[in-house]
Image (cartoon, rainbow, N blue to C red; front, side, top):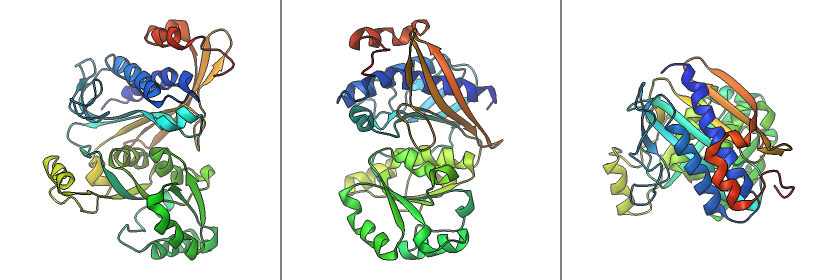
Length: 334
């Protein structure tokens, strides 16, 4: 993949973030997601790739756009797998909370795992813990190993986990061990990436979340030098068979980085919609302008770019219809 592709795909996440931002706090996650998806798809058509969506908004009969198997890009350039989450954190935007972002990952064809839409058990860490922990270990052992590797007391370890009823037992075990816990309302990708950013103050990300989000997080963590391990959690025979059909002959296999994103290059980009652990949100400015904060990374070079952009909204015709639908972009309510 050419390095110029990095800046091309960040334009895709910027537009998706701009399209969904006006829906913040309006209690309508469906329209927020639709706006991001439409914008992302339209911008992808201008990118010089022959792309196939391997992680998207659903199957062809479930999602009108960015469905699994859809061809995207200008159909010129490298053949690539594309994983997208046009709005990671639809409920976050609807409620006006933190950590919503538009996300995309691109890798050479055949490298990204075709992750089925089900839960995945996860363990994500930053560079200092990469290769030193195992999802197979009990959580107490994991925490103790992490503390030793980081030269910390167990009580100084901070673990992030989604605030879900299904995690009650795990949370109880973590509290018994004595770590600090930071709950995440939504935003599974952002949570898994957080341990790779020292300023986030997170040592481990644990618990279960979406399998597609696990692959997106793996792409980011490869660029950052971190690691994620996962294990699919099919709830019935139908889901187990779905895994087999997507090429996972052992649905409960421990999945490592190479299983999720291959051994080649990968590019990851994200633009904040609402403020988060490492990205600012979209800010509406006077004179029909908006500011976005993005990150774009490439595994081959381990280059990490933070990009702050100022956009003149009338020059983005893809956003025009949504502007007309919900009113002035610069309205104080936004």
